[in-house]
Image (cartoon, rainbow, N blue to C red):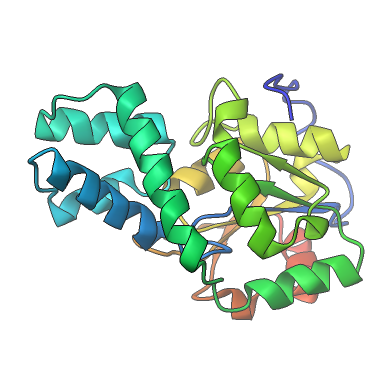
Length: 233
C-alpha cells in the first residue's frame, strides 16, 4: 500500500451489510505482544537500563515511534530512535523465526472469512518487514491487502490505516468490522467510522454502544460479525 490517505467519505450507510473485515496483527491474530515486550526488556538491559513492568501498558499497541520514544525518554538511554527501531525489529524477527503462536480461534476465523469470500485486510502498526514475515505464518492468501505502520504518515491511534484499508478494498468504513486488541487500535478503528470488536490482550477495554468486547477470537465468527452491523445505533 502507499501512504496516501483517502478522504473520510461517508461515515454512515443505509442497510446493514458487512462489506469487509479488517484485522489487527500483534495480540489479535498472533500471540506476539509478549515477544515485543521481551525484546524491549532485553535491548534496554544491554544498554544498562531496567524497564518497569507498568510501562508495558503504555507501549502496547502503539506505533514503534511512540513506544520506543517513550522508553528512551523514560530510561534516559543513550540511543537514537532510529537505532532503537533497528534493534527492536531485529530482535522480534529473531524470535518469530523459531515460534509464532497464533491466538486461539485465529486460524479458524481466517479460514471462515475466506470460505465466505469476505474481503479481509491486515492492518498493523508494525513495519512492513515484520508484517511480511508474519504473513508467512498467517497465510498471505487470507488477505486481500495489508497496511503497515510505516506506510502511512499517521498510524494508530489515527484513523488513517483503517481508512486506507477500506479504500483499498473499495468498501465503506461504516460497513467494516474491525478486530483489535488494544485501546490504541480501537481508537483508530472507531475514528475511521468502523464497527469494532475488541479482544483485549494486555490491558482491559470497556464496551460501548458501538464496541463489542469478547474474551477470545473463539467467540467471533461470520454470523457474529454480520450481527454487529445490525446493532449499529
